[in-house]
Image 1 (cartoon, chains in turn orange, cyan):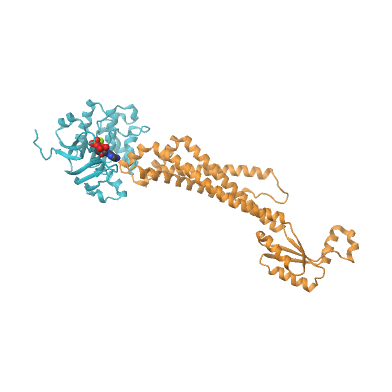
Image 2 (cartoon, protein in one colour):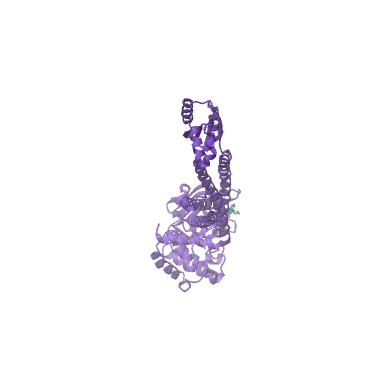
Length: 294
Length: 226
Ligand SMILES: Nc1ncnc2c1ncn2[C@@H]1O[C@H](COP(=O)(O)OP(=O)(O)O)[C@@H](O)[C@H]1O
Ligand SMILES: [Mg+2]
């Protein structure tokens, strides 16, 4: 294609956008809301993943051995724990070592306990997959010689729940919104197709090829989509960073900075916007050309 | 140039618009097509332009057998013809120049070709002074001359006009017909549908009359008819 022809076609696309300013603005708005919700879902998901990693580092389970367990049995239990597929690391702390640790913290107060140590031998266990938390804990409990298991179940359960909700609800909401956006864009383009039906009929009568007739509408769709993508990206970036910098949820767990996901979101928004735009325009112009042979 | 072999056209609604047309139009001819409203004249032209497809029979236009023409070849058939509409079909938001240039841009002409060719064609139809005007600023006769310029600009070997003077004052209609004969003199085949019996008579060209989907007279076959 000649550059001149390309420029003409792009101009035609921009011209029809301007002619249908309000409808174009409306469809950009709808697409922006769709992309924003998608972006939010993605950010929540990323943050939950991040929280998982954090929890994984923080949240270890401590299993205590029964009093009658001997040193040899303790070594065997440690080996048994390490053999579990979901266990990455096991640290054995004898009750004497444990008492020493507490003594460092609480000092002389515990001096009297030296003779009759009330503590139990402990195994500090790190898990690989927190979603298998419950199963693994039950397995640990069945091991002969294990008395009880201490863990912070609430956090891990909450995280698993949040992730599942974000995943399922997110996927459905995003799918629904994409369909709505597609529908709105297709209708916007349909309006511009109708407002330009005279041009289309002239184009066809003087021998324009199919793609030539379609091209300006593609341009229109691409512009709608990429403008929506850029606007959503800017909004999400601004709002997210304000939230992140001004609110702290917990001193040790922070929201991930936008910079960590900036390019995934940029590519996703622009691609998502443009694909929706192109698809929407292809749908409506194709339909029109099929129905109107003239 | 154009040949119809036992062509029938029945619309999906059941309307039998053409009921067996056999006709041959040679290159360089000037032909009037006349007939009452609803006789099938526009359908006849639409088959030539491949806007409609014959139900049976064969239409041949400048070596294209239209029954075998693929959809994506239609644009190339259309480039061989210039079409003039009764309602002019100009783009209101474009100047006279851009309306004519539009037809060239659509077939991928270069800016240089456009700058050379458009003023020339606008000169041919007598609109050299109006290139920057918008259609709304022109009379009906002038608007149709823009339509004519647009039909001519890609140098087609065939011009098709369906009632080109239907929306124009009678005194200006004559000018449009004059222009069409001038174009024909330069070698372009011209096909004109019209109601205007007076106009047809005054030009003394081949006249094909269609009535209820059939050719009922063709002055070429009876050239010495009064
Ligand atoms: N698209 C169409 N669908 C159904 N019937 C049509 C269509 N176009 C024309 N007709 C019918 O075909 C006949 C011939 O129409 P047309 O070719 O337009 O006649 P003319 O141009 O001579 O007035 C008429 O009866 C008309 O109603
Ligand atoms: Mg007609």
